[in-house]
Length: 371
Image (tube, rainbow, N blue to C red; front, side):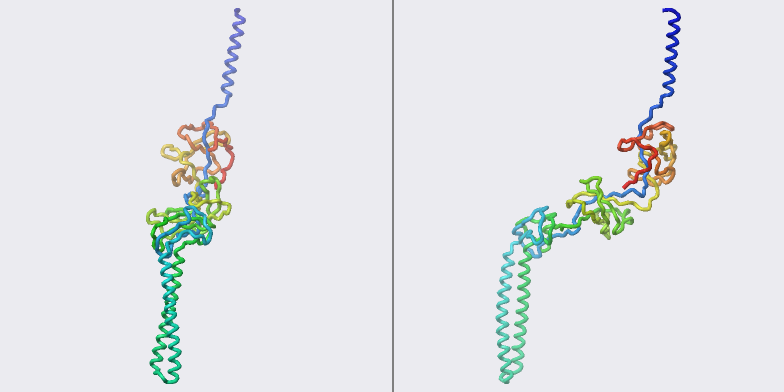
């Protein structure tokens, strides 16, 4: 191989190395992939309460007389119609009492007829002055007493007849038997719950609210309801009832939320979430994972919308929550910040941002409104 060829090879190698170095210098540095988010208005966030679907009209059904349960016709969850027989007591004793009352009425009616007949006869005699006036007054008093005893017996007979009817429980309207408390053969007392009846119609969401949240609630306040079986679907509702006193055990207040949306298909006992907007807060909030510490000062990593680089910025915090922290100064709502892995970042580092759904972030986009 001659010297000329060697010179050419050396020249080509040098040129290749030079071009390779230039291409590496012009190549854009690799960008770190980060999870980005925007600050939310703390006033727009909603408090969430777990609740249970209940009938607006629910009552415990019971017998009005004591006795032994002879028959039970429905079970838990049974749908019933108005007037449908649900259970029946052994009414043998009640029927005997009713028969005794009828017999007593007949006997006292006979006594009354006899007293009225004697009174008419003595009235004629006293007019002819054949008997004394005092004897006539005595017969008149006996007739009045007989009439009073008869009226008393008639009233008692009606009571006994009514009690015979009380041996049967009927559905007060269309609805569902949500709970059953008795079995056939069981002896029950008057007023003892036998069935829990939930009437068809409007439905409520029963929730329990802690004392610190109570001042922000009012009757008629609009809320939104989400059923656990229909996640993401919100229905309109409003606060219908707030308990006047706290529960002795849990120290929470019972609140009823009226589910006004007719499109909501619910089942009794179904789980639901109630969302209530917080009022009066003007601060922004960010996830706790977006906050880091710089010499004892809270900071966040803000993404430059033009260059796509991150910069550390000091912020002022207001209130810490379970998952988020309120920012009172140092951050605007339309800025994008790094949400996770902040301890691995470096000042001025180029990044490629994605949101929680792994979609590329448009850094110039405004914050989306939260429900």
